[in-house]
Image (cartoon, rainbow, N blue to C red; front, side, top):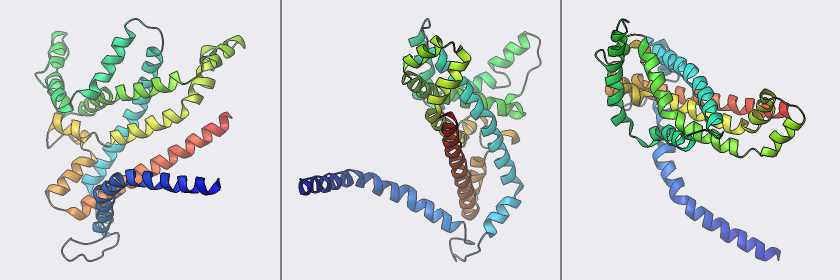
Amino acid sequence: MNIRLRKWSRRDTAAALLFLAPSVIGFTLFYLVPFLMGIYYSFIDNSVSGQFVGLHNYKELLDSGSFRKAASNTFYFTAISVPLMLVLSLTLALLLNQQLYLRNWLRTVYVLPLVVPVASIILIWQMLFDWNGSLNAWLDYFGVDRVDWMKTDAARNVVIIVYLWKNIGYNIILFLAGLQQIPKDYYETAQVEGAGRLRQFRSITLVYLTPMTSFIVLMSIINSFKVYRETYLIAGDYPHDSIYMLQHFMNNMFMSLDIQKLMAAAVMMVGCILVIVLVLFALERRFQKSME
């Protein structure tokens, strides 16, 4: 019997490895190898001589005012947009999980941004926030001064709104999936024992949504680092200083063929994301232990 199990497990393992091989090879060739090469380029002076210079590129990067501005704008954007995304998506998911009028229609509306190409929708955002756009026309109609949305500090608010609009539907779907996995018997038992809605939300809903919440926070942070596409399409090559992100800096380094600084910036960004991921995992485990 044990011999048969061993043969079966070996055959099953070989089949699994065979199916995984194309994905592993593709990931290695197009992601892992380029990333390792990027780390190597971040420690040399140029790609011709290839002389090792240690942390010199990183020091120059940290001394660069453009990089510090891009990094501060990116982290400020993440610190503001991710909590807003979390609160809004959870609130809407709780509402859509109830027996509301037009619930199915509302679910479809929130999912639409996921299937509509960003480039085509950006035209609508440009017409809305342009100096002569619809929003300024309404402000002027009500006697409020026009705002040059994309050439003032208000540009940061515009990018946050676009980011929320684009990604909130995905998070709502995930929260709805998590809410529907919570047994209703727990809420009925809590009601019998006299627990209010706030106590039920804190002791049941939040506890069972902890893994899903951690995943959503992680994905929201990663998506906040990829907001360059929307910013570029709305504001162009030279945006206002308030929305000059890390991707703008990397794009400028690529256009000037300064590969060493580009790779150093990319490695630092990956390192920051990795630290955030580890902190989130640690907080999730501590929270689950405290609620047991």
